[in-house]
Image 1 (tube, one colour):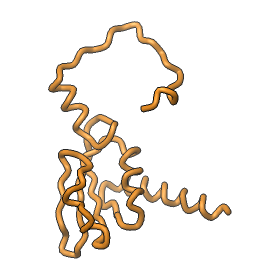
Image 2 (image 1 turned 90 degrees about the vertical axis):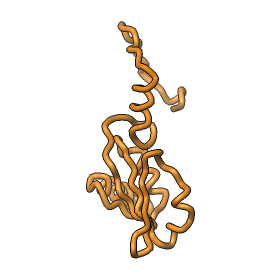
Image 3 (image 1 turned 180 degrees about the vertical axis):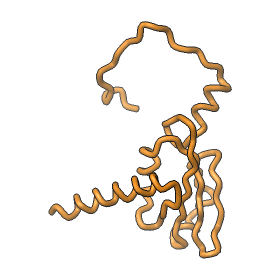
Length: 123
């Protein structure tokens, strides 16, 4: 988070709530990326063309689960609570990734791809 991008900073009239280290760690590591909250598991499959490129070594989240499918694709399951950062990470893989679940994440990825295509067609 960049300080120069912050605006409308407001001070609070009450002290911060102290949280023990164990609770803080559980809250901050339950989901992918910088967002917290109750996690949902997303399932993505990576194409056989890109799957061998180190997917067993790449870690998106400590609680991720991955497996090779019979068709050569690699399925990766990652807990997340907010899709914004995850959509960007998925889009990084372009046509070599397919979001299997949940449907709202698949729709969000498709919507971003459609906007990108529209931007390309404007020229």
